[in-house]
Length: 262
Ligand SMILES: O=C(O)CCC(=O)C(=O)O
Image 1 (cartoon, rainbow, N blue to C red):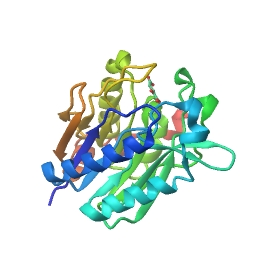
Image 2: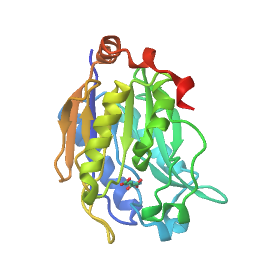
Image 3: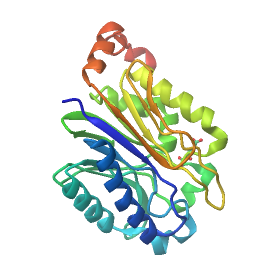
Image 4: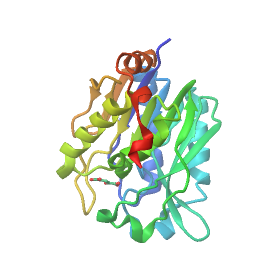
């Protein structure tokens, strides 16, 4: 059976984890009822939003609460969850970390954002990750990508050359650069001949208005689902055979000449 993937495009309440856990719980229940997806995707920093100056108080201690929360939801609804990202507080730093749970509620992988976005002061409050975002979910090789990361095609390529067939992009992408968001996502899908499932937030915070426009793009670069700027859901059925077909038709991965790219 071809899996359905749903992105939950949320309006995150600034600096209010209790409210945000509650709304995610409610929206996951609605998403399951609506489209019975195999995989649900949440946006970036969905517990706190960009309330970076208060992370010492509101970041999740070792990510424990979020892991437990996502695991229970995944198990209850028998759904795989790409848990957006949350601010994870360790002893000496805070990272912007994605948790992935399978539909048994088991922890699969975590990825911490590699490229910190200076325009939104991330480098003052967050520490970059050090590891790749490669994992397998629902039997599909996939990669986790967080917002600004999509501007670094070589980082994405480091995952698709290792077999990733879906890029799960989670974001709080601002409205003034909606054009960049759509163009970069389409480019990453076309050049990597893979699915791009991109979940952005809606709404605004004291400093930014966000773009929404979560998108699901197939390996040919066709947009198969796209939200507008409002809070809501998008869903699409995906077929990973299409990745093989497109890579067979135009064999970009075979034709790469990495020796020349140094
Ligand atoms: O690259 C951009 O324009 C937006 C990036 C961003 O908002 C982020 O990484 O949080």
